[in-house]
Each structure stands twice: as structure tokens, then as C-alpha cells.
Image 1 (cartoon, helix red, strand yellow):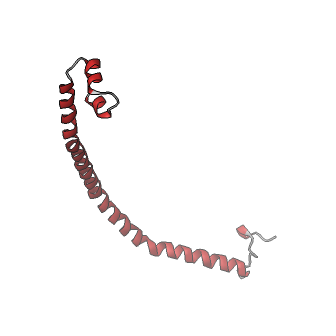
Image 2 (cartoon, one colour):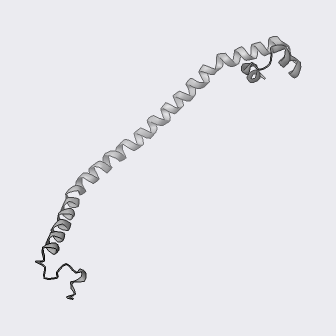
Image 3 (cartoon, helix red, strand yellow):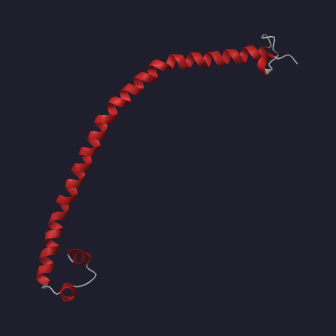
Length: 107
């Protein structure tokens, strides 16, 4: 009923008649609801902030470990890329004796 009073689509007298209560009670309930709203949302924001902090506390160490892991593999990745480039150059130059055909079978 206090929510209906907040919407202000009906007068207090209409709401009082509909719910069979005194208009002053509706006014008091509306005031209590309005007074409590900031506290409700501040608690929610505080709990959201705490949950976010907990998530960060769990994820930052994982992020650091992942970064270290990738950094340690980076030279290996570069070596593989160099091998692929050399392989392509070797076969495109015709020095392999395979004339660029896959599998090394002469045509």
C-alpha cells in the first residue's frame, strides 16, 4: 500500500477507502518507506562493493600467474613462428628438392 502511495496515481483518500485504513496511516507508512530507501540502497551498494573486492582478491593472483606463465612461454612461441617462416621460405625457394609439393613425393 505504501508503494501505491509512492506512485501517487491515487489520492490518499482513495487509497484509504480501498484498503480500509486511515489516510494518516498511509502517510506515515509512505514517510517510513521514503526514510528507509537510502539505507536499503546503501547496504546493497556496500554488499556489492564487498563482493567486487572479494572477486578482485581472487582474480588478481590468477591474473599474475597467467601473465608469468605466458611470459615464460613467449620465447617458445617466437621460436615456433621462426621455424614456420624458415620452413615456408625453404619450400618456396625450391632448395628442398621437393619442389613445394607436400609429402615429399615427386610428381
